[in-house]
Length: 546
Image 1: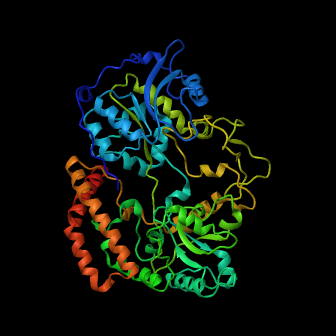
Image 2: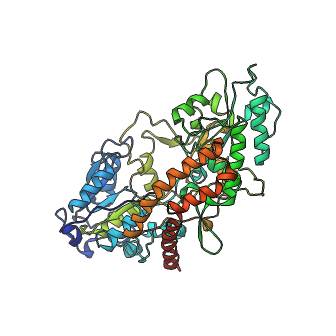
Image 3: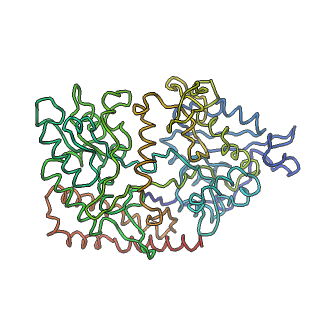
């Protein structure tokens, strides 16, 4: 859970400053909402925008999508460009100085920051602007009430236009990749329970699963906390209790009370299961320490595979996706049933991303809202993300081409490795509606297309059992005092839990004998206060939505 302590705001930062870029234009000089251009012939509108550069974008000033938008809308943008790595620092400097732009793009600000700046009058409330000037954004928010609720503050205001939607598979990206070829070699079925998974790993270790004559070179289960969701814990833990890293492992019970998963009896049983795997040599002893490159090297071992299973958001944690001979040996294992009948998947709900903010320096917020409303159309989305048809990244799909669900495809992606500055590459607010991925062709055979594998494993196996959003702590806004309390507690709490979990799993500490001591130390580190602060913020959030 990321929290930011905000910089002190000075001088005209509180009061607001006059805009030196453009004067406010009369409502009579706008065209009808929903039509283009936005302004009447002969009128010009411009605004400044803080805009981090996206990969493959050299500059927004000379980008063809920028020119297209200017021609379409009659509105120009003076971009203040920063690199992605420097964006947070430059943003803080800009805001502290009070010399901030009309519009702020792609800063992914948290709810606490948005609320503080909004209540100071620095960020404009956007509710009325959306209702009056952005029919496409309004429709998208109506279609995604969870996103609207997430970004609606306790004062009832939206201070940001969120980017909505994303890849379907990203909602359940804590997967387990299991070596299907090894299952075939040993005549084993795909495991469906934690007990069957244990038996499979045991067979991998003891029965020369890769058929190379060396019964000791197989590593049944590995992972890396530094690879993309390469930690196997969330996948296995969800067979004991629904739990998601996206909530900081805080769940909501049926009475609306918060509790910490890693202090639950179910978590204790999970630790015992993991200790069993470790003590029998089924869990790689390097799982807590190795980096993503070490895991990739393990999965890409030359000549023959030596890895049985690993956590990972994609098969790319195992091998380069271009190496189809290796990664296609693995399947995305469906969630397992635990000893008490629990079947769940770690969930990262698509709450949207903080993407476009209008500050109190903007003289023409109506024009800004209408400008970005275009990004919520099908045409605006694809032009922003991939550029224009037949100009480098996608073409009309040939007859007979099929999509992720074997229906006719609309487009075929082509390699974009050598092309730059064709589009904004998804910068700014966008609407990726459910199923937008189905527009594109998959390669044949489809099981050799990683997007096909990821999409279908998510839709068919993971999402149907994903943790219920009602049991998950949503994104919350904290006041300044709450933020300080959480910052003071959460770092030490997480450091201790990570250390204790490693000691329990590796057997350095006996789980039964040391469990009470573990719970006592959580209390000493402020777990109760941490939960109380979150409970207060959660209760305010729920009250504001009712």
